[in-house]
Image: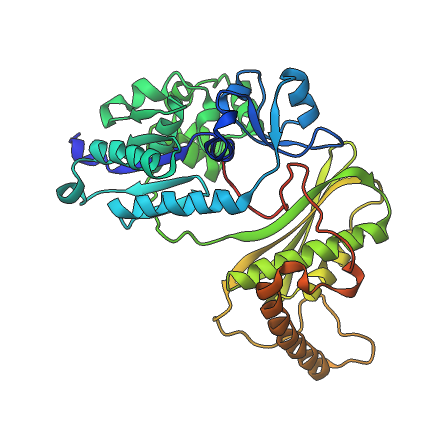
Length: 419
């Protein structure tokens, strides 16, 4: 195939959160630096430098375990304001080369540079230029993958980390893919990998060599997807504005909580935070999901879809309380609230009662609609105060005096995929 078929870049920052910390405090250079929660209690690692990874430390690992593996580890609390600012700089660099930029998180993105050759040179030259610009402008290091498709570009950026630059040309696909474990295929998680292993499929080459109909018969629609990827086939385009699918937050508690009333207070806090995030993004959603993890790590979810979309904390909390009643009693180590099935707030919608949500005793349909409209107006005014004086400026009365609960990685628990 012609070199012109190489037009997709995947740029991924190396140990992003930890790298920002080292950049801003050069005395940490060369040390095993991690970002996360404290070792006391149930703190977990959110990001680890490559020096820390050499000891076996990785994200999502309990901080206490990380300290056992690496006694001289430096654990820092996250500072998302600085990470977000660095991300804005990096995304701005991408925009210099192409308008087709699809961010995946704070620290990675796909770029389609087809048609940009006259201005910036070939795709490989553009990839090297972006690496240099990021290092010069932010002091941070990126790894870059260049390939004909998104799947191959993302795979390429991960092959030579840190400070990597890998090109996968069309005639190299089999050479690169065949020896890789099947888990390298996007969409093949631990469970699917085990099912494939039972069938004698351990590598990408093993999967590619199986007849397509055999894989589809075993895995259904997902079998089509993973079989295509095993052949390097990925028709997805780089989409500059990725549609947000959901918004939520979750927390792992320092100690298991069995008291349902205490859990409801936490849920109220989470619902208010999620609702504020939705309103800030101009979104509302119809599907509310409660996630609960027991002390034995068993995780369950309970979901309800409403008749009308909402971004109001009390409405989300009303449903969350119902969902909690559907979770069996027992001490919980984690709960989370997620709102999905999102839509733009500018989309017209009929005022109607939520599916399964009943008015208060003695309150009819018209009264319920009026109450909802009043709540919307009050929320709008409260948001003005929150944006001016901070999110904690206005809170429900039952949350007065309570600090925002931190996640065990030290974060505020909001959806932030990065590093």
